Length: 149
Image 1: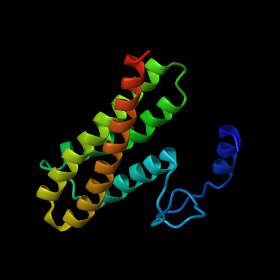
Image 2: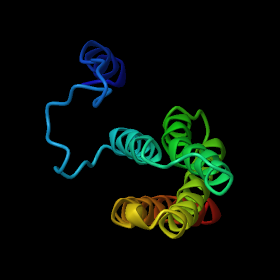
Image 3: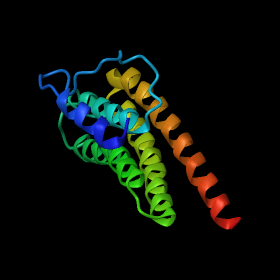
Image 4: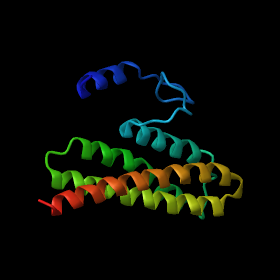
C-alpha cells in the first residue's frame, strides 16, 4: 500500500465525536509500529490530558508548552517522512528528538503542579521517553552513515 492509498483510507475513516477524533480498527493498547500513527496518538493523548488540567496562572504556561511540544513531535515526523534530502530528514528527526524530550520535561512539571494527574503524566512521560529513544537512534544512525560517506 502506498502512502497516498493509506492517506485516502485514513481520511475515509475519520470520525468526529467528543472522545475520539479518529475511528481506529486496532485497539488503543496494541503496540503501534507506524511512527506517524504513534506520534498522532501521542499528540491526541496529550490533548486529552491537558483538557483535565484546571486553567490558572500556574498551569497556563505549562499547558501551552506541553501542547506545543507534544503535538509537534508528530508534525515534525511527517515533515521528516516527506523530506527531499538526507540533510532535511536528519534536521526534522533531530527536531522530533528535541520536542519529545521537551515534552518529558513539561509532563514532569504537570505531575508536580497537579498531583492528581501524576498517573496520566507518568504514562505519557514513558511514551515520550520511548519516542525520544527511537528518534535519537534514527538520528544517530543517520549521522553515522552521513559521516561514513
